[in-house]
Image (tube, rainbow, N blue to C red; front, side):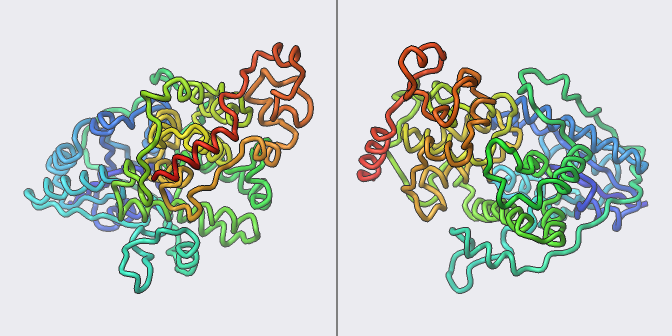
Length: 459
């Protein structure tokens, strides 16, 4: 009787799961294993919103496995200790897992490989599980570099690749009796979560995906920046935890066709682009990727401004609306992610790492790869070819929330302000403005722009 272990990490699904597919084909019995890694908590990534969503994902994965005759084995401890222990208990000769790109994940994989080598257990690491295209599959021809630093040429090459067909979920999963573990915890046991947190898991993700697919995909190109319309897929948390396969989404969108599907595929390509950047430069999670700037304001000299930004009290309605949505839902519309990040880094000239940390503290899709590199893109230290661009929150608010519906939804102090003045409440008569209970602008945009240009001139 042959046994294989499948180590689930950020790939909590049964559909299109290459490690599980390979293990089921190679062995008579399979141990589906998830390890609660204390190192994730020590690194500050185990925060309430993601912990609750993860609990849903694990519960759902366990239920889906039980429908196929199996179950999920959950252990707590260092991965390089728990996986070899499970392999020894069950007599497994091989372990399958998905490749990952963060520095932490790469170090974890190396420690696990070394720990499994002593007892003679083979580790198989599978590419294109958490991405549609493996990070190293597309490299610039003849440039001498190992990754693309600019998105558009990467997208061209990425789009030319032929992707494999998505794998079906296994019909049965036989788990050896010797495997033992803990029961998945419940999301209800997690305190301090955002009130509007979505339900996690592959079942919820596929249901959301089916609803959005049949309704908003066709109009995605024209509507995904409409703040009030909220026509984005909201699939990012499920992609972050691997409850949905990015490759399956790309293949289905391509089969669907049309401008909306093409625009959606482009967004999925951005995920792959960031993964190949961080795979090559793991230090970009904390270090300026392209252009280093040494004059950021930090916690010591900008504490009040940072707190005001975090609380959604800057006096710029679309910025405040985004920050309040983040706190309530653990999620934020992509357009307001750009606006709030730009306001912090370029109008307030605060270190991007401070904003990125706050986002990671709340985002249920808080992903080191995409969060950090998107923040760097906005801050002008990353892959943006126009690093000095500054997004005006008033202009952007009027463009992407022309009726002010999004602002009024999240900033109730402005609910009764009519028309486009909702984006410029400081232009209201003094008595009216005083009665709103909404703050005056934290900074004049022109002053912020002047400081930004002066500071960048020194770098």
